[in-house]
Amino acid sequence: MKQISSRFSMAVHILSMIALDPLYSTGDRIARSINSNPVVIRRIMAQLKKAGYIETKSGVAGASLRVSPERLTLLDIYRAVESVEGNQLFNFHKEPDPNCSVGMNIESVLLPQLSHAQKAMENELDSVTLAQIVEQLRTKVNAK
Image 1 (cartoon, rainbow, N blue to C red):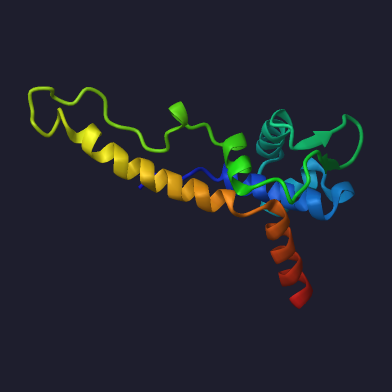
Image 2 (image 1 turned 180 degrees about the vertical axis):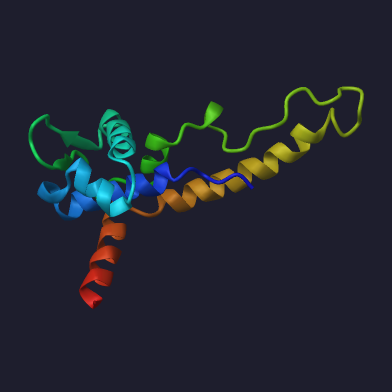
């Protein structure tokens, strides 16, 4: 099964670092924490900035959240960094044989099931806020 790209988990990582320590959250430090190329991190941060979730200033270290962590859900973050064609997670093969009984009906039969699965995922992501993720991170860090 095709996976959702790592941009989503990286975006949550980035936003968590910014929420925990904005001044420490430079692109280079975030890149080291994620163990990724700084260019990749800057691209994701640009997407988060475009969505209105973070603010960065040229020549100034760190970044800041423009949205309260209590109001920012995992679904918001997912939508900011994952480009899903037509807002559909699942795609269908193009042009099945219209003369085949399966080919002419597979999309209409399968679409409701896949839409239900996507909606369940979106509902779960929408039920978790960045604040909850940050609190779980704090708990784990303080337990060590």
